[in-house]
Image (tube, rainbow, N blue to C red; front, side, top):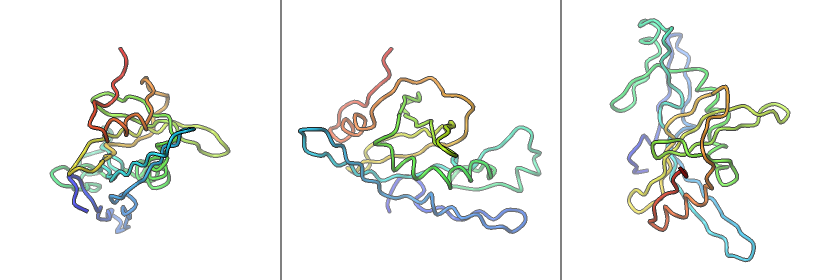
Length: 180
């Protein structure tokens, strides 16, 4: 897949020799179908990629030795591998992205959008901040997940329809901006 982001993630090997598979974050296509009564279905196919911020994070309490032992190198940047972010991404992230057509999407600032609420055990909700950007690349629709991490409370952000975002992107119109 010829895209401007990492298309295939190599596994991470930790200091104990354990191998952490990252192939679940490899670039892939997702097709979203917008249905509306009395109108023909509209199909949007996005090539989706993920940033290493979905599974890496440096913490202030980590020593330089700890950070060095967990360092993951991707492209021009490096960050320590984070088991918390990795576990959440492995368990939830792809399904969240595949379900954007039915999700509550908010404006996340800096031209990004985000999904924040996930369902956990027995219908309980937790907050998992998943910001993403959409754009055109080589005439194709692209969605890049810039990060993904747990948060304690719902962030502020005006709601926006994912299909409004996709519609405007496909038609070359300005993307929805938060109302001031």
